[in-house]
Image 1: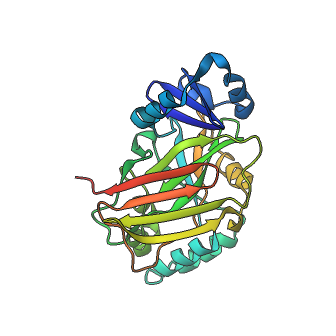
Image 2: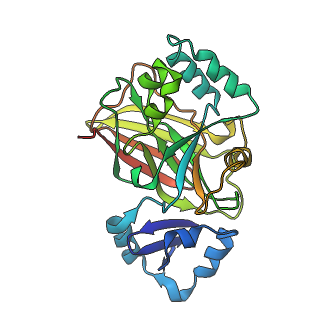
Image 3: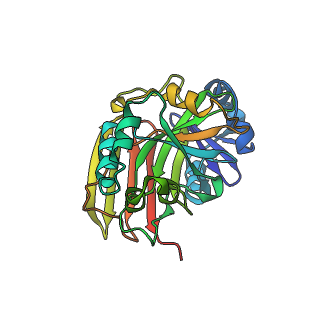
Length: 282
């Protein structure tokens, strides 16, 4: 099942059928057994036709987030570790990423408050004070208040590699700024955990030309999803639940940096495609 947040409520998709749910987003998603609950809501009384559903998705679609914080895990894939080490050679911090990749404790960092999150077909920002900016496509978990992974979505962890590479202590500035995170287009709520064979694909376009394209499998992640969720919830409470980006294995080459007006398409099997446009904060 897919659950979309719209301006007037929520839209539930089960196969080719759509159901309109007039609920507050946080009350709707922050529960145990979300899949079973949504199945109960997929009844004839809430059904709408596909034409009305498509109109709502076109005009009212929002990022699938309420009052949740967004966090991120870093260096969970070997490719990410290699990229972080490469960008940090001159600062002398390369060994930090090698060590955290093999450590028991993962790298976790705060990413965004809800008002800084962009949705599907929305703008994400690249920093004016960074010479090297890239998107990082990430499978993103929705974890409820009790620490249970209930759903999945697509995350775009916008990153300023030149800033992080200059000094590892600049990580918050490289990762946290206005519209530095994209999430969407929906919550994917399966009855079983997402398959490790799930494919993540990212494509970047500039002036209609494809500048980058690559794919990877979630199976290449070093840590399990419950492990990452467990570390995040070990010493913190999340009254509305949280979103956790789980890291990336798709990193453009070192000679690539985003430009204003680029289009980023991130596709994850079963969930769909998150499209973001790049902008520079005025």
